Length: 70
Image 1 (tube, one colour):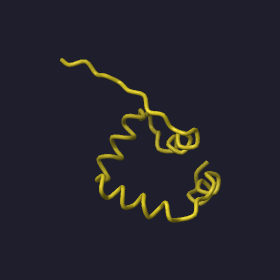
Image 2 (tube, rainbow, N blue to C red):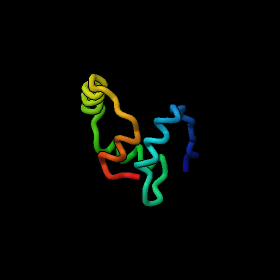
Image 3 (cartoon, one colour):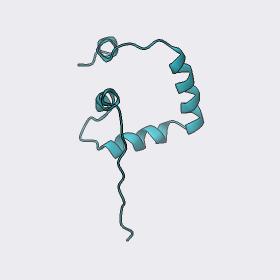
């Protein structure tokens, strides 16, 4: 059996805080990212991200309020 090698990924604090919203039910960060990658093809995500970046941002607190999150 091959050994698993881990790596570190640097994130801005606000990104890590936003990602925390996806880490529910005992999921690991790897689970969250694998689920994301299973659901979005790279090309689809890049197209979506390019369009999203054209929109004005909102504070995380506003996002949470709009989506009924704490």
